[in-house]
Amino acid sequence: MPGKLEPLADRVIIKPAETEEVTKSGLIIPDTAKEKPQAGEVIAIGPGIVKDDGTRVPLDTKTGDRVMYSRYAGTEIKVDGEKLLIMHESDIIAIIGERQNRAARRASKKK
Image (cartoon, rainbow, N blue to C red):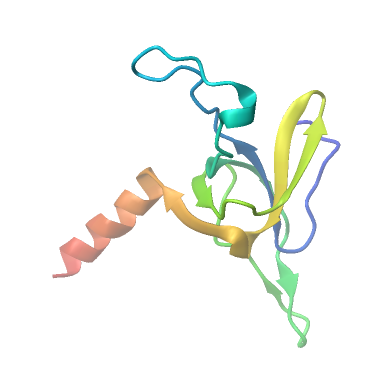
């Protein structure tokens, strides 16, 4: 991620996951027919929002998290030829993978 771009407040920068260009049966999908990706990797996070009492609320996501987000969330930008999304953390609907599995293991140990 270029060091030129730093999100503010509760915003995150996400690199969308690549969509498949060929179906399992071998058909090539044109750009106009591809669905907009709904998953990607968090590559930068803002410092969090400042509450009325002056304290800062940190974000739940971390750099490197794989996440799912709302289909039309965020603003698409290009930095050094790379497509990125800037969105509010509240547009992220799930964290995918290891972090989620750790939480599930902790919950099962408590039972």
